[in-house]
Image (tube, rainbow, N blue to C red; front, side, top):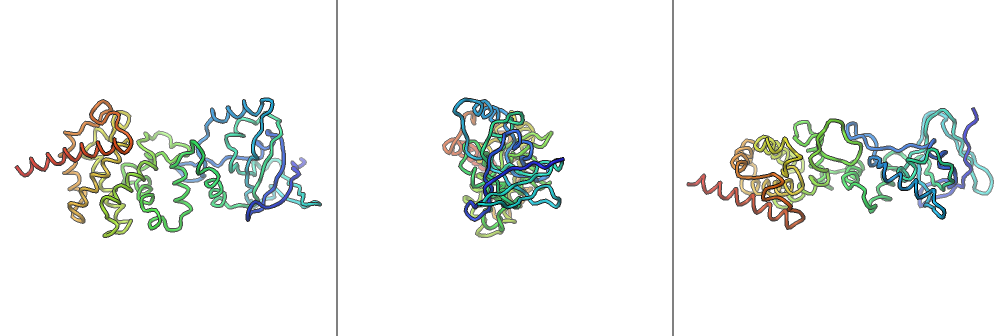
Length: 337
C-alpha cells in the first residue's frame, strides 16, 4: 500500500519547527485525532467535543466565499515508521504517512473545525508542529485557547496543574481544589466538572473552577497559610466538606434540587469555614465542624425556591454569607442561654 504524501513548506514558528501545507479536509480528518481529556484516567487535555459547534463550521466552510485560518496539528513522535519527513529543494519537504498505522497528527487547534468534515474534499491550510511532547502540545493549546470564548476555564486550570512544577506553592487554591476532586475520602471526589469527557454515572455538582475560587475565599479570609502548609490547609478544607456532606446530608445528596453544592452555596460555605478557623484555629476538628453545621442545618433552606433563590455574583454571595452568619449567631445565642 502506497504511503500518503503531503508536500509542505518547512520553517519555524517562534522557536518551534513547523510544516505548512494544504490538503483536503477528508485527508486531514483521516490522519489526525483529537486528544480529549478522559476525566477518569486523566489522559488527554482537550475539551469535550461539541457536535453543534462543529456542524456550524461544516455549514460555513461549504459556503461560497468561506475561509479559515490554518488548522493546527502536531506530529507526535512514535516508535514505529508511521511517518517520515524527507527534504526537497527550496525549503520544501515531503511528509510521508504510512497507511494502516492509524492517525498520526494530534489536533492541537482544529477539533471542532475538522470534526464533521470526514466526507468533504474542500482544500484547507494546515500548520503542523513536529515532535512536540504531549505536555508541550498542551501548553501550546492553552496559549492559543486561553482567551477563546466558551472554552471551559476548569479545563485550563487542569492544564495549569499538570504543567506547574510546584502547584502547592504557586497556586494553593488549585492544589486544594484538585485534592477535593481526587481524594477518595472527599465527598467531591469524581464530582467536579473539569471540562473533558464526563465520567459515566457521576452526578456533577460544581466545576473545578467554582471550587477553586471558593477555596481562594477560604484562604484569604482565614489566613491559614500564615500558620499552616498548603497540604495542611487542604486537610482542613477536606474535613469541612466531609462535615458538610454529613451534617447536611439530605441537601448534599440532591444536587439538582439544592443550592448547597452550586456556586452561591459553595462560596458561602467556604466563608463559614474561614469563620470557624478564625474562631478556633487548630482546635477545629472534623467532629466540631459536624456539630456546628448540624446546629445550622435545620435553619438553612437550600432549596431553589428558598431565600437563596436568584442570588448570584458578589452581591448574591455576600447576601448568602450574611444569611448563614445570622443563623450561626442565633445558634450561638441559644447555646449561651
